[in-house]
Length: 156
Image (cartoon, rainbow, N blue to C red; front, side, top):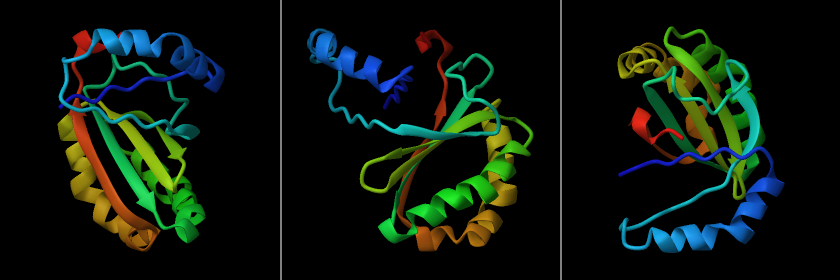
């Protein structure tokens, strides 16, 4: 499995790419994969510092796709700002991240880490306690995600 992240300067640039170049490029990749799923998230805010789509100073990306109960979406976002972001920002090895929203009360938390070991320490030390504090189980319908080991030769 591969995860491909693309960051667009604006929605207009994305729309232009989709209208002018996507189909031609996709046709050239036909048969090189078994399945694909693409999601477009609007950037709401950064996690820790100003997000840059630069991957040279991180070894691992943690992605969490969260489907949230519609009536709890505002609370979920507030808890991301007030509980989760400060905890991640204060964790050794956390580089930066972003929080985004897609239609249908779906959110993306993407965090970049210097190593899987650093992320593992954060997970072991804090996640359960923070989840209770943020009332995450009440907010979330489901969460899926992955810890992605970055491959520097794939970065463009």
